[in-house]
Image 1 (tube, helix red, strand yellow):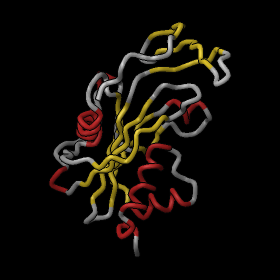
Image 2: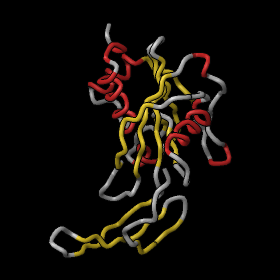
Image 3: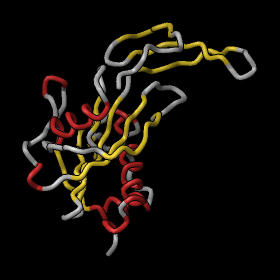
Length: 191
């Protein structure tokens, strides 16, 4: 489902891949405050998992956020991408094919959530999706014309669960999706 026009006026200070601006927010008491806002629209994210082999499919790509803090830029996460006016489910399916080379048919909704509501308008649609080896139909890799250099990785579910439990899974959307899978399908994580 595509987003309606913004309800909050924004004084744009930069427009590019992201739009940055200053918004006027009305407080509960009626007063107003100025807040910085980053907007790049809605996104969809899917965690493909193979219940037979007990693996999940993640993608590794360079991310500026970790690099800013001096951490490795190579970042493992569930496939995701912007809706660009399209539907959330169709976007998740498209991104899984583009980034991870996986054909998904059915998605299980997990949540619609905000990644960083204090400074970003990004609304994420989160999904789980089963796959099997026959669904690996391409190499993935992302779209080179968008500057993407993506590596698809199958990771054992028990390793992801261990990372989630020990606080070593740094991508928030992937963490939420692994925890949702742990709650919904605990038998996949049993010894």
